[in-house]
Length: 326
Image (cartoon, rainbow, N blue to C red):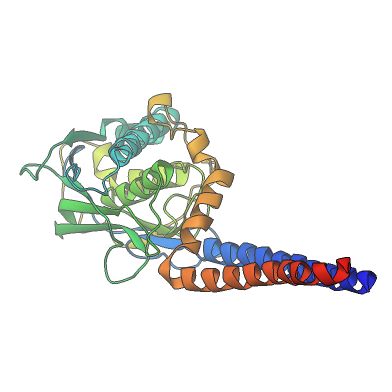
């Protein structure tokens, strides 16, 4: 009789272990699916698919080479993360680093060395700036996954002003980390410089972004696109009309320029700390997904079932133990 009871207890234990394995496999699969589908829109207009990598030029440019950027952080909002401001300032510096390096190493585009993004931080909007950057907590525009959006005003192909909005959270309520914010800001700043999207998924101007991605870089392709947009600077530092030659089109990287990431100075590089470790952040993101209202009820029900299965055999053993002793 004791052997039979022991076998029954083992049967429940095996069932419990089987269900636990299934549960964790389900969690892993769910997390993988959510993370792999967690591509968030950053940008404006998608480039057409080409056999070779192509970058869209939006057909607009600025009539000046120093662009004044005003950042307006919502410091009084409870959701605000001060790291977002630093991340965005680094993205501005990253573009300046890339443009300087490209102009210095590809002499036919040396005129680009005069182009500069100049950042100012204020607690409210002020007039006289070219580019305005602000943050919101929720995703942007009319799509649930829009975490970055650039809009601009222009006349006769000349940009008058541009606005960048950056979201602090995704549609699932998961906050962006500092690297995510810097990557997103880097992309949106590319739009303010006249770039559209590329069909190269590894490039910073690709139109979708996966949360917890590693730091992105401005490429020679991106810098070449900016050089094309600001080609009016090559003959004179005085602006001349561009509406006759600058069109919304696709460009490809010249054969004499290799595709590569452009270097960034240490002060503008995305920080690499334990908090930015992809494994740790994936575990944190998985936990945040599981406690999301869409999934929390399922997780609780499954956990209760497992607890009942685990406790039931123990109760039966305790109830039958006096009989066994007799």
